[in-house]
Length: 152
Length: 200
Image (cartoon, rainbow over all chains, first blue to last red; front, side):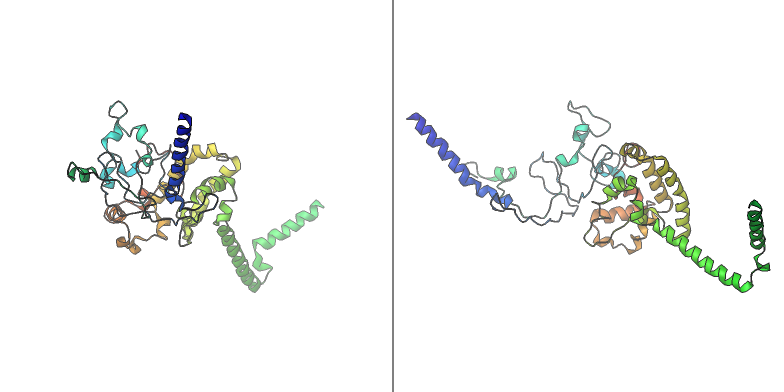
């Protein structure tokens, strides 16, 4: 009896997953798996040089300009040719945060910390592409403004 | 036999030393003119042939290193289909400067014969040296090869992004920077930039 109940529960939950998959298919444009999807056009990268609001205080800022073909490898780091401490006088770009000059123990280094070298691991440019899935994120400030007893 | 060759040579030498004594002035003038045209045309045609992309990438040193690298960049792949080939940037367009650069390039023939950069490892080893030479050349001639297409007088700063317009105003117009000061590594990958000014 108990076994049957578990089996029904498992079956039910897997059915729910299958049913939900149709809705999570937005990035494929709801095209069946075995069919090739017509690719989206390449959207323009926003190049306004205007800083964007961060969704939460620790969010790595997004890049407000194009970074096409920027070389970031063993030989050179094009981002740091403007954003490093010694270059901001020349470039007038914002300096990377001081945390990027700290090692994992919090010691300050003379140069960029190796663990922070690859900028695109956290910082990315934005395009004008329409969002493929809905975003229900609510800024913490919005949350705090709501009366304490209401559900968001 | 030897005597005949000797007499033939001495006859040739006599005519060569004072051709006007043996050949008519008209023949010499017209012949000299035609010969001059042929030589000049042939010389320039041969020199232009060494200015083509096909000539540059006929060596694997160029084809499998720098030619590979330029292909994803804006100077090779772009929406308007205008392409800069090797010589557009690496050879001056004016004749005297071009000849001077071609004479320097005879060193590159030496390098080709003795295989100075004939493997990827050797190429990478020499990359900073070769890149620095080009940067120095661009700095010395005020980025002339860039300006053959990108003339700052013809740039509409209002059509540039605010960041680019501001940097150009500060460095190019008011400062004494030249294109290559900032735009290094736009068509090829950069060498190890440790110790290069502006890249510390």
